[in-house]
Length: 132
Image 1 (cartoon, rainbow, N blue to C red):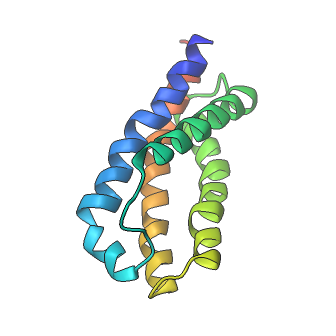
Image 2: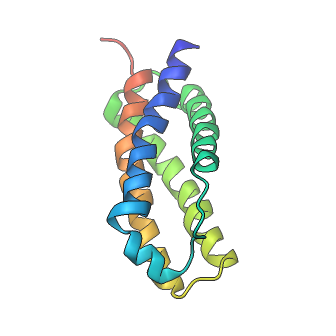
């Protein structure tokens, strides 16, 4: 249970600041020009979403890749999680929401997903890596 909690934190702790600064600070003008987000973003729902994702990813990692090295486990996890996350964070949003440029959204949000999983995958892998 302790490892699972650490894995959830390994997902949430970097994802929140990365997501916040990426979407609401660093690239906020770009997202504003895409007209994809509401003006009254409700951050607690985003944080709740991150915790749900973190729990699911921790359970999946534990069952599929526990005991792998950080590099091998992190790569395996990223190859599973990143395309899945990309499908619901980029493709599904692009399909359902009004925006000024679908391709503009796909490019910027795809970059975010790649960076996010490049950061969190080795951190989750480190929690479950085999002891030497």
